[in-house]
Image 1: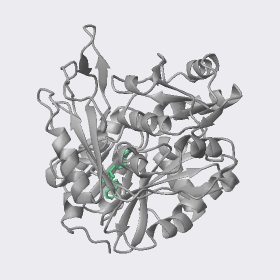
Image 2: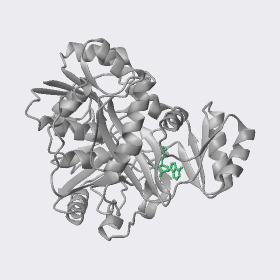
Image 3: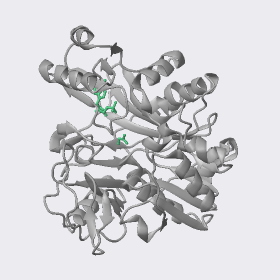
Image 4: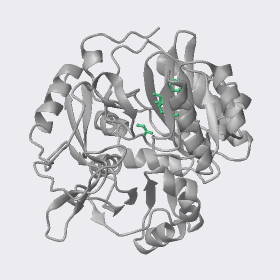
Length: 418
Ligand code: AMP
Ligand code: GLY
């Protein structure tokens, strides 16, 4: 099977590493890729936001399966274009990707499917913003309705900061959603689906805030670990029955079947499981910890989802142990990351590249806010965490920052699910 991965982050690097270890894969390409994916895949240039270009590349490269990593090409219709070219594609249609592309669309689907989520107040203009904040009460949750690379949400007890974020989104022509605040630990649960059959993966936890102790602004994700030693027994079965399967069924009923990766961002609140958000693709950085634990060959699984044959696919099997990934970010991330700095000590297994590129002089340079996702596995979470941080210490990037507490609360038993 010739597999083409679209994207250039550490998620795509992790996908490429997992795909190369599937014996069914005879050739692997990554477009456009980064300085790290060179080691595992052929590179092809492409504008990922251009569905016609993605489909032309898939045809020209003679791909048997295209795996689309990021949300931007999905929302733009890249999966539709690839399928129209007669090639199997892992990733939802543009219409189905609205489950991530529009938070209000996701709310409609959840409401129709009876899926538990935070109460939401859509805000049409500045006057409604104040009313919505008063009704929702503090802590305030103010969201950009559209795609914002994980940075469109402000959660704050400061009413002025909540107002300011809402105004910023409205002034930029966006739509705003104010939400009920959800307490409790967060879980990311991915499911592979062909639009009918749903196979959940292992739950993971992402560290969304920039700084230790969950301080600082929201980011795309500063680290992750799996599995979750504190997760209640039966969590995956419960989420499959109350969230994932009803959502996939509702999308099919609407005539917008969702195939690909359905990512449920969940809060385990004192009143039960609630959906914080859906994404239409593998999460980043959670993929970096989930895939190293997956024993089932990845290409066969994704191909079965892409071709509607998941019901015939064997049950998934998992390796023992745990995985931890620590994101090494550029100075200024997430607001204004500095790029173009040399990155060294970033070769070898486990160092997944996110925002890197090869400079004109052949050296590896930072090229994005999240530069590396340094990943390790181990017999348990404590061992995986220690191995990941030992590896981080060998990385050199001027002004880099990373959280020092990824998976720490879980290792120390400080997370309790209600
Ligand atoms: P989202 O882009 O919707 O995933 O939001 C990013 C992050 O903001 C989530 O992972 C949560 O940490 C936080 N968040 C979003 N919605 C809520 C909510 N209703 N209550 C509490 N925190 C939230
Ligand atoms: N880790 C959060 C995301 O992928 O959206």
